[in-house]
Length: 112
Image (cartoon, one colour):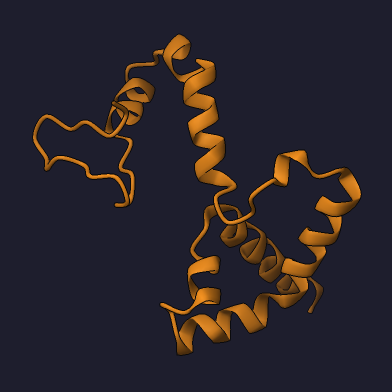
C-alpha cells in the first residue's frame, strides 16, 4: 500500500520500494499515519535490512558491529568501486551500513 503511485508503474515485490504513499502522508502532515506501528516496523525493516537481528542484539554486539563497519569502510568502498554487484557491494547499499560508512568517512575527514 505504501508503494502505490497513481501515476507511476505498479510496484512488484523484490524491486526497490518507492514509498509514494508515505511521502504523500509526510507532505500532508499525517502524523497518525506515519507514526502507526506497522509503518514504523516497515521503515525499521528497510533501515536495518543488511543486519538481520540488529534490534535483538545487546549493546556490546551492536557497538562491535558499528566499530567493525566503521573501520572497514575504506575496504567496503574499494570493493564497491571494483565490483558493485558483489556480496560486499550489495551489503554497502543498505541504508544503515551506508549511514555508518558515511559517518566514519566524515569522522576521518575531521580527524585529519
